[in-house]
Image (cartoon, rainbow, N blue to C red; front, side, top):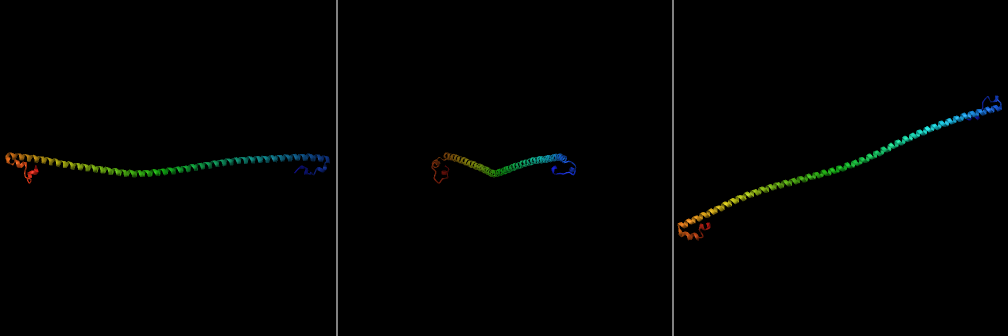
Length: 192
């Protein structure tokens, strides 16, 4: 309350001018005290408000920092998710490529097995043909030997017959004409 609204019990004992002067001084002092208290209260309020503002500012800074950390963490998680997805895609691609290589290898092994079978069959057929050629050569050599012996026997027989005729001519000159032109039923005709 303002001091002008107050009345004191000792006022009637003084003169009006003194009372008025005292009232004025008292009111002025009380007003000064009130103003000082008001200023102090305002300063305290301003200081409290300043502290509140500082606290709010600090809280805002902390909130912003927390928000920045959260955003950075969220971005890092998103980057990790992207890298993870990329890694999964790369792993899937490599697995598909590996499966294709395994299929190619299986097909190659099958083709190689077939090729080895063909090679083995060709070797067997070549060996068989070689053995057949050797057998045919042995038969040919055997037949050649028989033919050579036959030719030798024929030559020997011809020489023996020639010698026999010569001896007969020398022993019986009359048979010479018959040796030259023997009858067709004669065995010597064929031997000649």
